[in-house]
Length: 220
Image: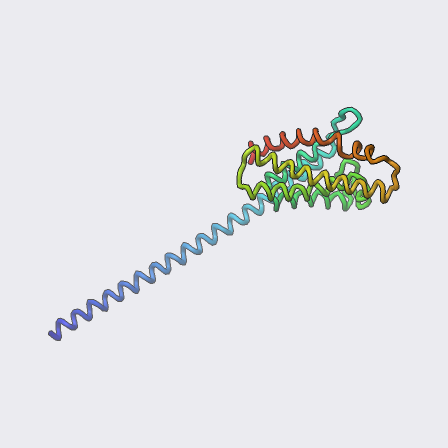
């Protein structure tokens, strides 16, 4: 009986050792898996960061080029900036899209002649400067709305573009009025002001929203 008890104790001891060994192996495997996942996440994070910088640079270049593409329609001139800014925001998202548009604004203000009428700190006194501010602010909210819906349909892109357009026009019009009437002391009538700054551009910008939405559907 004593021998039988000893054998049972040995068996139980072996079983406990096996369990401890299996537990150690599982712990090591979990640790290795955790380290592997951490390395993959860090790699993906660096990749997204590099991709964000690269695409931001590309869209800043597009913004610069689009500022100097003037299409005369009657008595007004149309640039492609809103189209590029809108696509930039919707494709790059609220983070990198806003960074790109804000960097474009900063680069112009520090003196690079990348705006449609030049550049430099004095450009803030241009009546149209509010639209450049509107690119970044409107782009942020447009991208936020698109990301919140988590959809890549034409309807979502179009609604996002219209939000962008509305915010841009609000900032641009208010800013233009402040500069025209507050700084320049212009005697331009209210209707003449709206005709010069807003009314003829609305249908054209809606067309740009449609084109931008189609581009985003293809590339998004």
